[in-house]
Amino acid sequence: MNKPHLLLARAVFPEIVDRLAQHFHVVSNQADEVWTQAQLIAKLQGQHAAFTTGGDRIDGDVLAASPDLRICANMAVGYNNFDLEAMTRAGVLGTNAPDVLTETTADFGFALLMATARRITESEHFLRAGQWTKWSYDLFAGADIHGSTLGILGMGRIGQGIARRGAHGFGMQVIYHNRSPLTPEIEADLKARYVSKQDLLAQADHLVLVLPYSPSVHHTIGAAELACMKPTATLVNIARGGIVDDAALAQALANRTIAAAGLDVFEGEPQLHPGLLRAANVVLTPHIASASLPTRLAMAHLAADNLIAYFSGKPLLTPLNPEVLSRDLTAPIRENSGHA
View: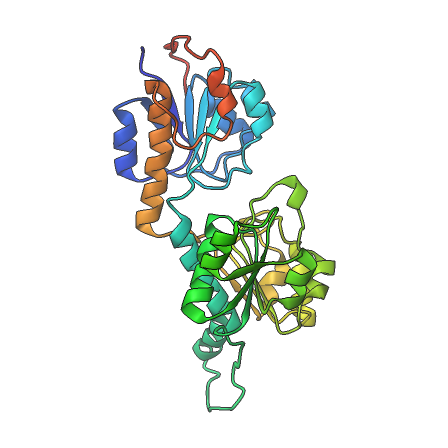
Protein backbone atom coordinates (compact mmCIF):
# COMPACT_ATOMS: atom_id res chain seq x y z
CA MET A 1 0.00 0.00 0.00
CA ASN A 2 1.22 3.51 -0.80
CA LYS A 3 2.18 5.62 2.17
CA PRO A 4 -0.89 7.60 3.32
CA HIS A 5 -0.91 11.35 3.80
CA LEU A 6 -1.40 12.85 7.28
CA LEU A 7 -2.16 16.37 8.41
CA LEU A 8 -0.93 17.38 11.86
CA ALA A 9 -3.37 20.19 12.52
CA ARG A 10 -1.51 21.65 15.51
CA ALA A 11 2.04 21.61 16.84
CA VAL A 12 3.00 18.47 18.71
CA PHE A 13 6.09 16.93 20.29
CA PRO A 14 8.94 16.56 17.74
CA GLU A 15 9.33 12.88 18.61
CA ILE A 16 5.70 12.33 17.63
CA VAL A 17 6.29 14.05 14.28
CA ASP A 18 9.33 11.83 13.71
CA ARG A 19 7.40 8.70 14.65
CA LEU A 20 4.50 9.48 12.34
CA ALA A 21 6.87 10.37 9.50
CA GLN A 22 7.93 6.71 9.46
CA HIS A 23 4.38 5.73 8.46
CA PHE A 24 2.95 8.77 6.66
CA HIS A 25 3.70 11.62 4.33
CA VAL A 26 3.31 14.26 7.05
CA VAL A 27 2.17 17.85 6.62
CA SER A 28 2.90 19.40 9.99
CA ASN A 29 1.67 22.63 11.53
CA GLN A 30 4.65 23.01 13.86
CA ALA A 31 4.23 26.78 13.61
CA ASP A 32 1.00 26.09 15.58
CA GLU A 33 -1.15 28.40 13.49
CA VAL A 34 -4.84 28.44 14.38
CA TRP A 35 -6.66 27.89 11.10
CA THR A 36 -10.08 29.05 10.02
CA GLN A 37 -12.46 26.41 8.70
CA ALA A 38 -11.58 27.41 5.13
CA GLN A 39 -7.88 27.06 5.87
CA LEU A 40 -8.41 23.67 7.53
CA ILE A 41 -10.34 22.47 4.48
CA ALA A 42 -7.55 23.68 2.19
CA LYS A 43 -4.94 21.87 4.27
CA LEU A 44 -6.99 18.66 4.28
CA GLN A 45 -7.04 18.35 0.51
CA GLY A 46 -5.42 15.04 -0.42
CA GLN A 47 -5.01 14.03 3.22
CA HIS A 48 -6.10 10.57 4.31
CA ALA A 49 -5.72 11.19 8.04
CA ALA A 50 -5.71 14.09 10.50
CA PHE A 51 -4.13 14.42 13.94
CA THR A 52 -6.41 16.89 15.69
CA THR A 53 -6.89 18.65 19.01
CA GLY A 54 -10.09 19.77 20.69
CA GLY A 55 -10.07 23.06 18.80
CA ASP A 56 -10.13 21.53 15.32
CA ARG A 57 -13.77 21.27 14.24
CA ILE A 58 -14.54 18.32 11.96
CA ASP A 59 -18.12 18.73 10.76
CA GLY A 60 -20.24 18.01 7.71
CA ASP A 61 -18.86 20.94 5.70
CA VAL A 62 -15.26 19.93 6.36
CA LEU A 63 -15.99 16.30 5.54
CA ALA A 64 -17.85 17.11 2.32
CA ALA A 65 -14.84 19.09 1.13
CA SER A 66 -12.30 16.43 2.17
CA PRO A 67 -13.21 13.26 0.25
CA ASP A 68 -9.91 11.46 0.87
CA LEU A 69 -10.15 11.74 4.66
CA ARG A 70 -10.57 8.41 6.49
CA ILE A 71 -9.63 9.00 10.13
CA CYS A 72 -9.28 11.87 12.61
CA ALA A 73 -7.37 11.11 15.80
CA ASN A 74 -8.04 13.57 18.63
CA MET A 75 -5.28 14.26 21.12
CA ALA A 76 -7.93 14.77 23.80
CA VAL A 77 -10.40 12.72 25.78
CA GLY A 78 -13.21 15.07 24.79
CA TYR A 79 -14.45 15.06 21.21
CA ASN A 80 -17.16 17.69 20.99
CA ASN A 81 -15.13 19.12 18.10
CA PHE A 82 -16.21 16.05 16.12
CA ASP A 83 -19.62 15.79 14.50
CA LEU A 84 -19.62 12.03 14.97
CA GLU A 85 -22.88 11.49 13.11
CA ALA A 86 -21.54 13.32 10.07
CA MET A 87 -18.24 11.47 10.34
CA THR A 88 -20.02 8.13 10.45
CA ARG A 89 -22.13 9.00 7.42
CA ALA A 90 -18.94 9.96 5.58
CA GLY A 91 -17.18 6.76 6.64
CA VAL A 92 -14.57 8.69 8.63
CA LEU A 93 -13.36 7.15 11.86
CA GLY A 94 -12.86 9.27 14.96
CA THR A 95 -10.65 8.36 17.91
CA ASN A 96 -9.85 10.06 21.20
CA ALA A 97 -7.26 9.75 23.98
CA PRO A 98 -8.91 8.65 27.25
CA ASP A 99 -7.41 6.87 30.27
CA VAL A 100 -3.85 8.21 29.92
CA LEU A 101 -4.91 11.58 31.35
CA THR A 102 -7.25 10.40 34.12
CA GLU A 103 -4.97 10.75 37.13
CA THR A 104 -3.26 13.93 35.97
CA THR A 105 -6.61 15.60 35.30
CA ALA A 106 -7.98 14.45 38.65
CA ASP A 107 -4.87 15.90 40.31
CA PHE A 108 -5.50 19.23 38.63
CA GLY A 109 -9.20 19.20 39.42
CA PHE A 110 -8.41 18.75 43.07
CA ALA A 111 -5.72 21.45 42.94
CA LEU A 112 -8.24 23.84 41.41
CA LEU A 113 -10.78 22.93 44.09
CA MET A 114 -8.25 23.69 46.83
CA ALA A 115 -7.09 26.94 45.26
CA THR A 116 -10.71 28.06 44.92
CA ALA A 117 -11.81 27.08 48.43
CA ARG A 118 -8.75 28.60 50.10
CA ARG A 119 -8.75 31.78 47.98
CA ILE A 120 -5.17 31.26 46.84
CA THR A 121 -5.30 33.28 43.61
CA GLU A 122 -7.18 36.15 45.24
CA SER A 123 -4.71 36.35 48.13
CA GLU A 124 -1.68 36.14 45.83
CA HIS A 125 -2.93 39.10 43.78
CA PHE A 126 -3.43 41.01 47.05
CA LEU A 127 0.12 40.23 48.15
CA ARG A 128 1.73 41.05 44.80
CA ALA A 129 -0.09 44.39 44.74
CA GLY A 130 1.64 45.36 47.99
CA GLN A 131 -1.60 45.43 49.96
CA TRP A 132 -0.47 43.07 52.73
CA THR A 133 0.47 45.30 55.64
CA LYS A 134 -0.86 43.43 58.69
CA TRP A 135 -2.45 40.20 59.91
CA SER A 136 -6.17 40.04 60.60
CA TYR A 137 -8.37 37.20 61.83
CA ASP A 138 -10.45 37.02 58.64
CA LEU A 139 -7.75 37.79 56.05
CA PHE A 140 -8.78 35.64 53.06
CA ALA A 141 -10.52 33.16 55.30
CA GLY A 142 -11.94 30.55 52.97
CA ALA A 143 -13.69 27.21 53.23
CA ASP A 144 -12.39 23.97 54.69
CA ILE A 145 -11.83 21.02 52.39
CA HIS A 146 -11.23 18.25 54.91
CA GLY A 147 -14.46 16.85 56.31
CA SER A 148 -16.64 18.86 53.92
CA THR A 149 -19.10 17.53 51.35
CA LEU A 150 -17.68 16.96 47.90
CA GLY A 151 -20.26 16.86 45.12
CA ILE A 152 -19.35 15.44 41.72
CA LEU A 153 -21.50 15.82 38.61
CA GLY A 154 -20.36 13.16 36.15
CA MET A 155 -18.77 10.06 37.67
CA GLY A 156 -16.59 8.66 34.92
CA ARG A 157 -12.90 7.87 35.28
CA ILE A 158 -11.86 11.42 36.21
CA GLY A 159 -14.81 11.95 38.54
CA GLN A 160 -13.92 8.74 40.32
CA GLY A 161 -10.30 9.91 40.63
CA ILE A 162 -11.46 13.12 42.29
CA ALA A 163 -13.82 11.20 44.57
CA ARG A 164 -10.99 8.91 45.64
CA ARG A 165 -8.75 11.86 46.50
CA GLY A 166 -11.51 13.55 48.45
CA ALA A 167 -12.71 10.53 50.41
CA HIS A 168 -9.41 8.85 51.14
CA GLY A 169 -7.11 11.87 51.24
CA PHE A 170 -9.25 14.52 52.91
CA GLY A 171 -12.01 12.62 54.68
CA MET A 172 -14.68 14.30 52.58
CA GLN A 173 -18.26 13.08 52.35
CA VAL A 174 -18.65 12.26 48.65
CA ILE A 175 -21.98 12.56 46.87
CA TYR A 176 -22.47 12.35 43.14
CA HIS A 177 -24.97 12.45 40.32
CA ASN A 178 -24.51 10.59 37.06
CA ARG A 179 -26.67 9.26 34.24
CA SER A 180 -26.79 6.02 36.24
CA PRO A 181 -25.41 4.97 39.63
CA LEU A 182 -22.09 3.19 39.94
CA THR A 183 -22.00 -0.40 41.11
CA PRO A 184 -22.21 -0.89 44.89
CA GLU A 185 -18.62 -2.16 44.87
CA ILE A 186 -17.27 0.98 43.21
CA GLU A 187 -19.39 3.20 45.45
CA ALA A 188 -17.97 1.43 48.50
CA ASP A 189 -14.40 1.85 47.24
CA LEU A 190 -14.96 5.56 46.66
CA LYS A 191 -17.08 6.03 49.80
CA ALA A 192 -19.53 7.76 47.48
CA ARG A 193 -23.31 8.08 47.59
CA TYR A 194 -25.62 8.61 44.61
CA VAL A 195 -28.09 11.51 44.96
CA SER A 196 -30.44 13.43 42.69
CA LYS A 197 -29.10 16.46 40.87
CA GLN A 198 -31.21 18.71 43.08
CA ASP A 199 -29.77 17.17 46.25
CA LEU A 200 -26.27 17.40 44.82
CA LEU A 201 -26.66 21.14 44.28
CA ALA A 202 -28.20 21.71 47.68
CA GLN A 203 -25.79 19.62 49.75
CA ALA A 204 -22.35 20.08 48.17
CA ASP A 205 -19.84 22.35 49.83
CA HIS A 206 -17.64 21.93 46.77
CA LEU A 207 -19.18 20.94 43.43
CA VAL A 208 -16.90 19.59 40.69
CA LEU A 209 -18.13 19.19 37.11
CA VAL A 210 -16.58 16.30 35.16
CA LEU A 211 -19.32 15.30 32.71
CA PRO A 212 -18.66 15.07 28.95
CA TYR A 213 -20.12 17.77 26.76
CA SER A 214 -23.01 17.17 24.41
CA PRO A 215 -25.83 19.47 23.29
CA SER A 216 -28.09 17.78 25.86
CA VAL A 217 -25.96 19.07 28.76
CA HIS A 218 -25.50 22.61 27.42
CA HIS A 219 -25.92 25.04 30.34
CA THR A 220 -26.55 22.21 32.78
CA ILE A 221 -25.43 24.75 35.39
CA GLY A 222 -27.23 28.04 34.92
CA ALA A 223 -28.82 30.72 37.08
CA ALA A 224 -31.49 28.38 38.49
CA GLU A 225 -28.96 25.71 39.47
CA LEU A 226 -26.54 28.23 41.00
CA ALA A 227 -29.41 29.60 43.11
CA CYS A 228 -29.91 26.11 44.55
CA MET A 229 -26.34 25.93 45.86
CA LYS A 230 -25.17 27.02 49.29
CA PRO A 231 -23.95 30.63 49.41
CA THR A 232 -20.73 29.25 50.93
CA ALA A 233 -20.25 26.68 48.14
CA THR A 234 -17.60 26.58 45.44
CA LEU A 235 -17.99 25.39 41.85
CA VAL A 236 -15.15 23.84 39.82
CA ASN A 237 -15.43 23.10 36.09
CA ILE A 238 -12.77 20.91 34.45
CA ALA A 239 -15.24 19.35 32.00
CA ARG A 240 -16.02 21.49 28.95
CA GLY A 241 -17.08 25.03 28.26
CA GLY A 242 -20.80 25.30 27.63
CA ILE A 243 -21.78 23.00 30.49
CA VAL A 244 -21.87 26.16 32.62
CA ASP A 245 -23.68 29.32 31.57
CA ASP A 246 -20.69 31.62 32.04
CA ALA A 247 -22.81 34.78 32.04
CA ALA A 248 -25.02 33.39 34.80
CA LEU A 249 -21.96 32.28 36.75
CA ALA A 250 -20.33 35.71 36.48
CA GLN A 251 -23.52 37.24 37.87
CA ALA A 252 -23.70 34.66 40.67
CA LEU A 253 -20.10 35.40 41.66
CA ALA A 254 -20.74 39.15 41.64
CA ASN A 255 -23.87 38.71 43.76
CA ARG A 256 -22.18 36.15 46.05
CA THR A 257 -24.89 33.63 45.23
CA ILE A 258 -22.00 31.17 45.63
CA ALA A 259 -18.70 31.89 47.31
CA ALA A 260 -16.25 31.18 44.51
CA ALA A 261 -15.50 29.24 41.33
CA GLY A 262 -12.50 27.55 39.75
CA LEU A 263 -12.62 27.27 35.97
CA ASP A 264 -10.34 25.55 33.48
CA VAL A 265 -12.82 25.60 30.58
CA PHE A 266 -15.05 28.30 29.15
CA GLU A 267 -17.72 29.03 26.59
CA GLY A 268 -16.11 30.28 23.39
CA GLU A 269 -12.59 29.76 24.71
CA PRO A 270 -10.01 31.20 24.43
CA GLN A 271 -12.31 34.21 24.79
CA LEU A 272 -13.76 34.67 28.29
CA HIS A 273 -16.88 36.35 29.55
CA PRO A 274 -15.69 39.77 30.80
CA GLY A 275 -17.60 39.32 34.05
CA LEU A 276 -15.38 36.37 34.93
CA LEU A 277 -12.26 38.44 34.34
CA ARG A 278 -13.58 41.13 36.67
CA ALA A 279 -14.49 38.73 39.48
CA ALA A 280 -12.02 38.45 42.35
CA ASN A 281 -13.60 35.24 43.65
CA VAL A 282 -12.72 33.01 40.70
CA VAL A 283 -9.60 31.04 39.82
CA LEU A 284 -9.03 30.93 36.05
CA THR A 285 -6.71 28.58 34.16
CA PRO A 286 -6.35 28.17 30.38
CA HIS A 287 -7.65 24.60 29.78
CA ILE A 288 -4.58 22.89 31.24
CA ALA A 289 -6.03 20.12 33.41
CA SER A 290 -4.16 17.42 31.50
CA ALA A 291 -1.03 19.52 31.03
CA SER A 292 1.78 17.55 32.54
CA LEU A 293 4.54 16.71 30.08
CA PRO A 294 4.32 12.92 30.59
CA THR A 295 0.55 12.94 30.18
CA ARG A 296 0.48 15.16 27.10
CA LEU A 297 3.14 12.96 25.51
CA ALA A 298 1.10 9.84 26.33
CA MET A 299 -1.98 11.47 24.76
CA ALA A 300 -0.03 12.24 21.60
CA HIS A 301 1.34 8.70 21.41
CA LEU A 302 -2.18 7.28 21.80
CA ALA A 303 -3.44 9.42 18.92
CA ALA A 304 -0.46 8.24 16.86
CA ASP A 305 -1.11 4.62 17.86
CA ASN A 306 -4.65 4.88 16.50
CA LEU A 307 -3.52 6.41 13.22
CA ILE A 308 -0.82 3.80 12.67
CA ALA A 309 -3.11 0.92 13.64
CA TYR A 310 -5.82 2.06 11.23
CA PHE A 311 -3.59 1.96 8.17
CA SER A 312 -1.79 -1.20 9.36
CA GLY A 313 -5.02 -3.17 9.65
CA LYS A 314 -4.54 -3.60 13.40
CA PRO A 315 -7.20 -3.16 16.12
CA LEU A 316 -7.96 0.43 17.03
CA LEU A 317 -7.37 1.32 20.67
CA THR A 318 -10.05 3.98 21.21
CA PRO A 319 -12.49 4.24 18.31
CA LEU A 320 -15.45 6.57 18.82
CA ASN A 321 -17.60 5.30 15.95
CA PRO A 322 -16.40 1.71 15.47
CA GLU A 323 -19.31 0.94 13.15
CA VAL A 324 -17.24 2.66 10.46
CA LEU A 325 -14.71 -0.16 10.75
CA SER A 326 -17.26 -2.72 9.56
CA ARG A 327 -17.45 -1.06 6.17
CA ASP A 328 -15.26 -1.95 3.22
CA LEU A 329 -12.43 0.52 3.61
CA THR A 330 -9.86 -1.61 1.82
CA ALA A 331 -9.61 0.51 -1.30
CA PRO A 332 -5.98 1.40 -1.95
CA ILE A 333 -4.65 4.75 -0.85
CA ARG A 334 -4.34 7.03 -3.84
CA GLU A 335 -1.14 8.95 -4.24
CA ASN A 336 -1.89 12.50 -5.27
CA SER A 337 0.24 15.53 -5.65
CA GLY A 338 -2.44 17.98 -4.67
CA HIS A 339 -2.17 17.64 -0.91
CA ALA A 340 -1.51 20.80 1.07
